[in-house]
Image 1 (tube, rainbow, N blue to C red):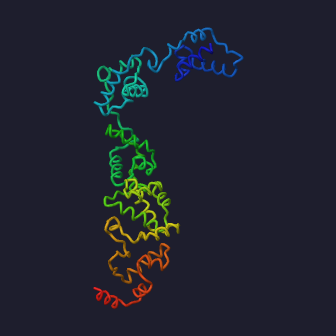
Image 2 (cartoon, rainbow, N blue to C red):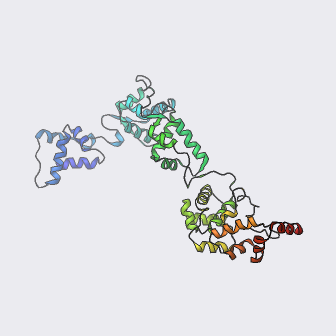
Image 3 (cartoon, helix red, strand yellow):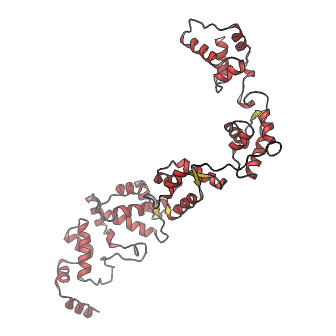
Length: 387
């Protein structure tokens, strides 16, 4: 008898033991106890009543529920019922699959699985009685009314508007990133937005709404969208960070991308939204403090790259802009003491020696000393003579 039950279980691996017991007219606890004793003490067979043995031995595989034949009882093809359900869902946005399942006295998961199979073109059968009840929805069986909003939810529209506004303001502002920033489950927020799109009356959990609405700004790697940012401006920012002592690996880590991504951008000089937001995020985090890498500074100095404060946000993205303190070939830089002092202070802040500063500025030591010690009137006279 135990072997017979084990064969039934093997033939219906997804069917609970309790379901086999119910179809045999045996208490589930009796059948489970029988199987447990057979596993623990195989040498000592368990005895049961003659009536229990007859019921169990009378059950065959064909008597048990099967996925392709529904979940017990008479089954029928689910196509017509599922098409009717889909029509009701499309015609009545306030309805949910769960509400229709409850109205038809069936499990919501059963209805969802059957609807998914039929719409995917897979064969599916359900109980004939369940199919009749589904087809009667909207006719003999009234459709469920609009569900009252739960007391622990609020209107989702402000949350939807806020999420969309953040996505418009920031690059790389996915729903998942906004959810993580708000310390809520990403799937919870995504599901709430999807539910709202389907049924505007659906609410959102009060605590989730409060957390999301409290997010006013997003941290890196999200970064405010800047329509004026150019590829040459992004390349200048990368090079400037290098002059400040930041390696490409450190810049990549600060901007949540890979070094390979930044290397590829430096090679092609063609950015993507991810590269743009990454470089801008690193620029915001690192441009105002010196980095730890002397090797990066030497590498940048050998290529005469310009440091961060040689640029300002109004000019760094302009292709024809020149950095402050950098001479344009063929032109005469009009130096004055305040400008030179500003440039020297900036370069020394980033670790350059006095001779290196002057070399970067294109000035000799004698010329720099003249600028810093000459009276203002003498400087104005020299500029007038040169003009």
